[in-house]
Image 1 (cartoon, rainbow, N blue to C red):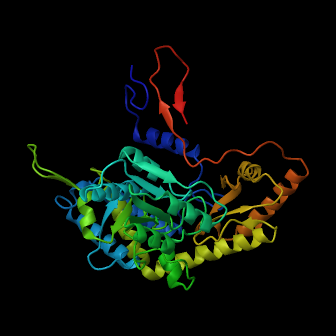
Image 2 (image 1 turned 90 degrees about the vertical axis):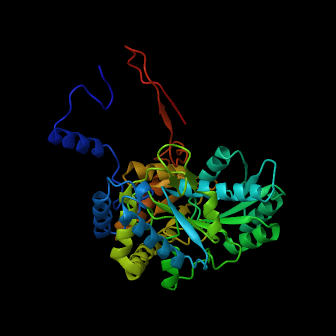
Image 3 (image 1 turned 45 degrees about the vertical axis):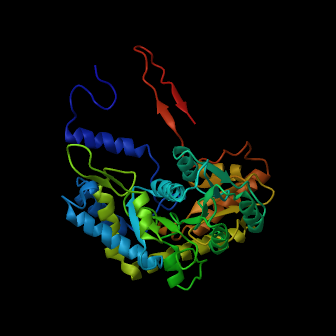
Length: 434
């Protein structure tokens, strides 16, 4: 008797479609006027382009983009050329496309380690990162047998810079800044971090996975976001997720290097087996051609002007949210440079506020240290700022009057569950989870 997904007999296509539709109904809608958790929506037209391109190339393996499927290789070159221009990469720069931000960050750490070892550096190497840097960097150091030195929470940016400077030593090979970090929308001081990296002769990686497809167009619109790219001397590499605000289907990210020889430390080329050359530019082997086609198609569909227009619209929506929340005496955490931001109300359990908003169908995220409600703004939120602000005001009043009590929930980015095989006849479903 087979269990799980594979039954004894197959389902008809109509039955299977109905099953899938019912399964999807158990999920939250991934975008919509009340969905403020990470989603990257610029309009149904863009979604249609991204989906159609993905479906057209869904069965083509990007691993063979330089052999069997040359169109995928051409898409890859076009996308990289666009990114070189957007991030002001100098002559001689290079880049690779990856499966997502985690792979891009792992490879950024991988390059730093292997280049340092190639110059004779020995011992247990380490990287130094701000408190808000992505946990994929901790994953990278674990996989690469390195140490990570993550700053504790600091009251000011200056205090964190001081901590980072003190944490550097002779075995440090990489410093990281984010543009912006996920917990808060304020871009790290990349120029200051670059000076620090140069002074110690180490690499600086900029994690622009979240803001890389926002900030260049914000600058074109005259918003004057902080510089974060290769115009800053000392930036060694930069990562950007195209499946975030590049609006493509998942999963595709990019890692851009100032120096082309960095790519030699990420690639694998192997010939000592019967099937000839096996070559990959990074960790992944098989990759979905649909993700690459989707990224390319969205770029072609929107063009520079289209990206600017979508960027302008979403910033205007974000600004209205901030204005209406400040009218409630909410404080915005830091100086948000991109679409997402965090707010808090004084004298209130803001994690409880986040939980109560979600119970009423306003699906928000939250952060701790400081406790705040987090909003990821998209095009789906046009016209929603006023009713959202009213909901915040009403719930806050109830909390202050004691009508809504209890502790707020801890912030969660993602969870892990390990599905265990069960003994026969055991109806319990034990799992190990974190």
